[in-house]
Image (cartoon, rainbow over all chains, first blue to last red):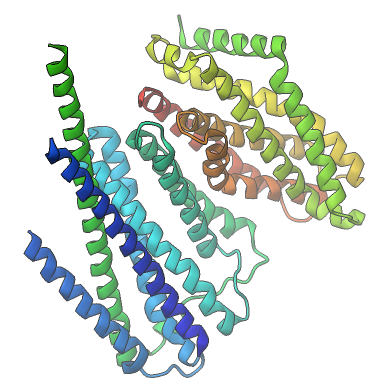
Length: 39
Length: 232
Length: 224
């Protein structure tokens, strides 16, 4: 049933998007730390 | 700490995979609703995690206003964000489930409306943090969270009492009445899996926030020292 | 100076400033008028329908007009850096909060006094139920919007996109009050159902959020 797949797909889409947001957050944090340690 | 986390993450991933299998294959198809009923195994666990996150944020906000510890604020923002994520899933899967089963995408009953309002409130919370000049203002956010959660209670009561002309679909039907043990199994596994996943996300987000707090602190320290050195 | 004394002084200062400049009230009044006219154009209703819907329409219109008013009053404070002065003054934050809220309440009451007759005229409204209930709904509803609006106004002026943030955070919080206001108004207009429960609910809402606002205003004012 397409509704079933839509529901599951949407669930994972949202979760994966958030994981990507978190990853980007960590990336930016790493850059900032590198910045800090530079001087 | 890192390895403990890695183990927990793998465990969670395993649970989620097993849960997915059980939900789609392991559990038998329900008699009245058909395959669409399987959405239940995802919708309810996500709702449950959301119902854990937002009260935790409420508590954290109160505690933050009293103690003003940055770690508490980090926990507050973590639970708020993760709560919004799970709430989004609930608000999306709910209508997708309701449409084939009850023929309506949406209804203004107490539970759905409170969920939507909570979502709006916490998006507002996150925007308040994001748009504050000079970095997120944890005090304002905490105050707003308190207002918001109180308000959610009022919303629930208001709809209960003032909006009686809308159908109040009962989310109980398939789940409680003489349930097949394989269905219960699929349900419980997914409950556990998503709870672990939610906890993992909060942990990650908390670490991210706390580290950022320390980095900002270090930055401030550094420019202070530079300034003093320069002034001399 | 006593708490009430400070309240009175702040309030009269605000009102006097507003009376002199009249810029906030003029733009608000005109905006309110426009909102009423546009709503009236958008919906072509029979007498029965208008009684059912007018409650909702008037409160939505008022909500938008009130947000404009709220943004104005706090923006003026910010312009003159009054907020910082408030912070360092020994005046208790609660009096400030009450003074601002009462001031906003009076502004929105003026809006109500203007918009209600217009709605009555445009929609040919006649109330089936007792009018005092409508008045009560207006007063309690006004306070509900204004007490939260003032509190959040103080918060949102410390942000970027401040005019947008206020409605963003005010609307979801006001939803239960809106439901009650509309419920009471519609019940009274149509004569169906009792307006008592919504009115009591609204009163409780007002009390709870006024207390929370009083309790937290100092904290919010001092937050940098």
